[in-house]
Image 1 (tube, rainbow, N blue to C red):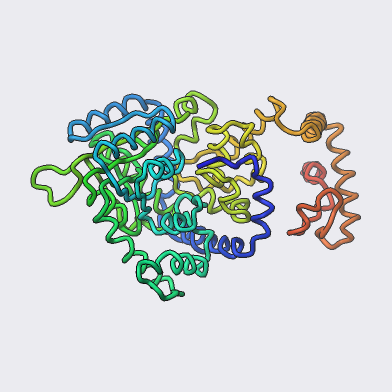
Image 2 (image 1 turned 135 degrees about the vertical axis):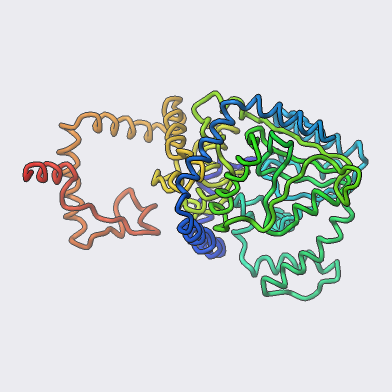
Length: 473
């Protein structure tokens, strides 16, 4: 996917005015946030499970080379093959070479964020391959020629009417001439259209939620069963995964699976949890003749040794973006790269550079909600602040912004200046609010007040109240 992160501000302005998008994004709250809260409330040990998940992921990162080699050895013992890709170009070439060698004509794909990261579909199509997405959300976006806007619900930005129009236009040539308006009808039509594509496919490509070093297994979780068909019916199965997806044992994978579904969709477990361990063996009823795992680095080794190491704990549940007020307002397409929301705001500058994607970290309000719901306790606000610090240090921000930050830092470090200045400013704002408790407009804050009110400050600063309370004691 071609990056357009440098257009982030323009993309945001468009998203905020898009009525259909705003209607679609309103479903995030009831569809993910409320369901997560409900299912977490029934599991008293959830916080202990989060800590366990954090420890498992940290242990893997401390011994990543060992577990990757162990995984490779187990895959080879089962008759599969592991391929190592340093960057996106190498990963694309590996997959293309496999497809050429087996003379593939059709590829069926399960959902894979790595394939988005390396722009795999485009590369295979340039080779003349017919590439079909099997995940319903990804299939919808393939018809719309759009990238995903969410890592677990890629088409969440689409309304039912938009999907109905897409299916009507795309499926007429296949004999489907009725425009549908209910979810079950749309799903059934997609199922009928896709079913024959599984049987025709020469190669199936899936992602990986986890790679188990103990068994050499790849784990994918789905709610549609499309992943099972994508990895068992074609004669060649290719797994695309990043090096940080490995876990030591099946027990570790089980603990992380308990976190994943609850954090992602508010389920105790997804409908399908599929383990793939090598090619078909003698006596197996189904399965591929060849099994390949493409392990992608693409800058992750550098992250492992740097300030953004914690980001490699991520299990791609999407909870951070579900609870992010910025994502809830602008969606994922404003980022215009594979990873939207808080994780994208941390990852994308690491992959593309701060010069290209620095605006993403500055969009965050640093409210901390993302960190409070992360199942493996990634300190996302701290990582976003680190991007901002590096921007300031390298003078990548506009001069007025740098001067304002420098002035603020100078004042904040001097309490004898800061406290009376804040007290004066708060007093003036209180007067200007005229007792209404909020502002509908303020000079230089029009971008904020155009879409929301700005609460007026309390009558006294925290320092003033604290001193008064201390005096009483």
